Image (cartoon, rainbow, N blue to C red; front, side, top):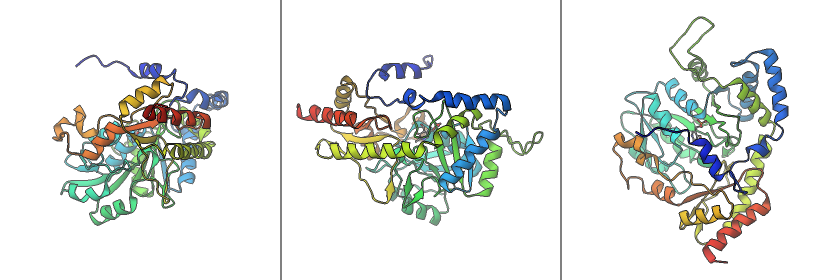
Length: 384
Ligand SMILES: Cc1ncc(COP(=O)(O)O)c(C=O)c1O
C-alpha cells in the first residue's frame, strides 16, 4: 500500500480559492474573539475533560430536541459506533443500511464488529424502506437509516417494520439537526439519534465532535460509561471501553453556535428554496421530491444532473465549488470487498453516485450568488 498522506489540507487548498465556496468557516467564526474569551474562562476553571461546558451543551441539546438524554461524544462516527455497542450489537450481527451515505456510517457498523447489509436507496437519496423486509435475516439486529442532507427517511414505515421485526433503530442524523418528520425531530424516532459537529455540519466545531440523543435511561447510562473508559467513578471501571468524550473546548464552540443554529437553519432553507425555484425549469436537472411533512435542513443541497462531471468542471471554472457527495457507493468501496457485493446490486444508489451534485447552500451565500449559479447551470445546458 502507498504511504497514506494527510490529504485534507491539499483538498481545501485546491477549492479554497473559488469565490462561491462550500467552506464558509472564516466568515462563520469572524467573531472568534468571543469564543476565545470563553476559552479563557475555562483556562481559569481547569475542567478540560467533560466539565461545565459539556454539561451545558448536553442540557441545551436536550431542550432543543426534546430528548430525555443527550451525551456528547468525540465524533458523529463514534456516536453511531457507541450506540451500536450500547445496544449489544456486535460480531455475528447484521445491521441494515444504505449504500448511499458517507463512509462513517459503514465504518461505525464495521468497527462495532457487526456486518453492514445494504438495501438500495430511493430517489429521495434515502434508504428505500420498501426493500428493508427483503434484507432481514435471523442475524439482523438493527436498521440504521441515514437522513441524507438533513432530509428525513420515511420514518413511519421504517419504524413499523422495526417494531414488527423487533429490530433496534439507530438513526444516523449526522446531517439532521433541527430537521423533522411530521413535526418530530430527527434522531428521536430510534433507540438513539447520532449527530456530527464536524466543521462543515450545520452545527459545527473547530475539529471533531458529536452527540447522541436517546429516550432510554439504560442506553444513556451505558453510553456515558462507554465514552469515558467505562468509569463509574474515579477509581472503578464497569466495562472496558473507549475514550470518546466530547472535547470541552469543542463544547464551548458548540455552545456559542447553538445561539445561532435557528438562523443558520433558516438561511439554509431559504437558500435551498431559491435554488429549487431557479433550477426547477431546467430539463436536465432533477430536484428530489419535497414533502410538506418533512422539514429539511439542507446540510447539503443536492440535485441530479445530466452530464454531471462536465457540469461540475464547468461550474468550477466559473468559480463555483460544486461537489460530489459521493462518487462511489459503499458496497463498491475496496473496504466492502469481503461482503460479496458487485456493481449492479444497488442500481439506484449507483445512479445517484453517477449523477448527484451539491451546490453551496450555507448561510453566507447571497441571493445574487445563487442566481449566478443557476444562470451558469442554464448556460451550460443551453449555451446561453
Ligand atoms: C452521514 C454521515 N454519517 C456520519 C458522519 C460522521 O461524522 P463525524 O465526521 O463527526 O465522525 C458523517 C460526517 O461527516 C456523515 O456525513
